[in-house]
Figure (cartoon, helix red, strand yellow):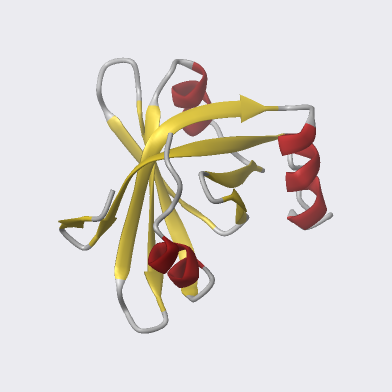
Length: 125
């Protein structure tokens, strides 16, 4: 686990549109979804609300690693890769419930623990 580089942390606040969240299943097949209910928990953890996961949740619970792809208003792309943890109670879950829209179920929160960071093809971490 590592902290986001400072420049990427600042760019996170400048992101635009939905992010893409990718996982893999136990057979190595990728699954990618758009996510809008996403937030930085701290400098080494990004949270995603589980509002309507199906295959994604199966992948997470089977031990998948994951990645988040986001783009900034200036059209710079960043990818964050790392291990995944699922929380349906506790401090991480409680944090998600604060920012996830009340009209959405928020069944749980996925924590992506930062391990690698890319700006386009350039590895930053």
